[in-house]
Length: 157
Image (cartoon, rainbow, N blue to C red; front, side, top):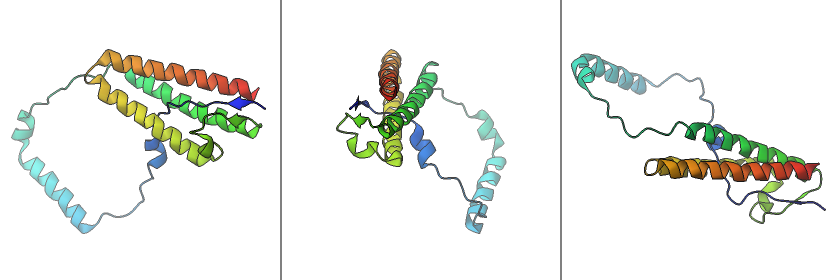
């Protein structure tokens, strides 16, 4: 029997994709329509204040973080796929924290999405204080997930 491992450090952005429901095509209520019109007319009435407003730029996110987020999210999807494939071929989930959800595709995807979101949220908080630490953190998370994914696909063979 093949032992199959998933990471203890779960992560990703997919919660926004999984949890986001498409908007329904409904007409806005009259109160909402009136509030939007009132806001628009108030903004149009004071263009001098808007034009004179200064935008305060905070610290800039390092350019390498967004690609690291995307690659981490992709690795989470690949981990979910490889886990499902390996389990379908008779492998056993070795991570005791994931054993309960590994057999259920929806639950596995939800856990992976929540974990990925948590890791990305932590990196987002981190870069404001220490940009290098946030980058190293995301590189380490990507390397760890890449190792898990390659291990999972090797278990499938």
